[in-house]
Image (cartoon, rainbow, N blue to C red; front, side, top):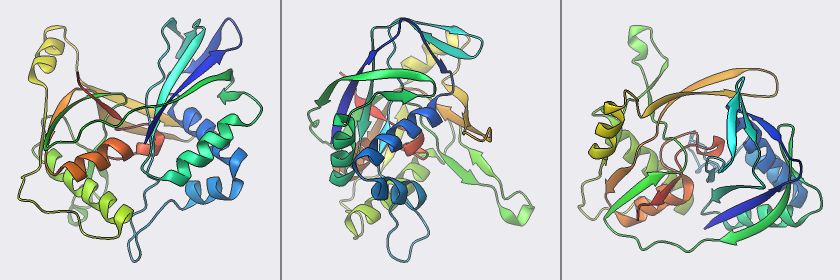
Length: 267
């Protein structure tokens, strides 16, 4: 299920760090805690893990903030918009129930030092699923592998948009999420899984000297920084509709609960 949350800016000007994903994630957990502090804590600290698996997922994602009237000043987004909105998605009913209950609780929603009133919660219709779907990105996509530890380089490598391993790693991630959600193996209907980025969009950015790749810094409350190399580009995915649905609801790729991998169906 997916919702759109529209916020009311209470003050004429609000300032949010350009790298705001940690602060928006913190606002979501704070909202969950207003419904159930136990649920919010367990989700934050443990997430969901299939029995016997070391992989843990939180099964939600959120989009970039939609701020119509904004400027960038000294590493901050300066918002002069009356309304700000973003999307949240999860296949977990309990997550969405606690989120909505928390949103109806009294008090503003705070993103870092910015203060917003809650104006509208809208449930969005589910798309029609098929074996071939084209998406545009509401937040950037991050996919990584670990370099071979035998070489002494057991470090994370974020894949570029043209890396031949991208489709395989996306499929592996979707299959793991599916197992955790449904406690069974993903369906196998003989449809080879693949994804490809929109060539026209890539060419358009190349002509402008721009890239679909961006380096995003996640900075937590202690000041610790994590750098994520991500991709922002429309893409077409081919595969089993059930796996595609998992990507749509949970987010494609990794770092979904920090606001990565959210998509919408291209019109």
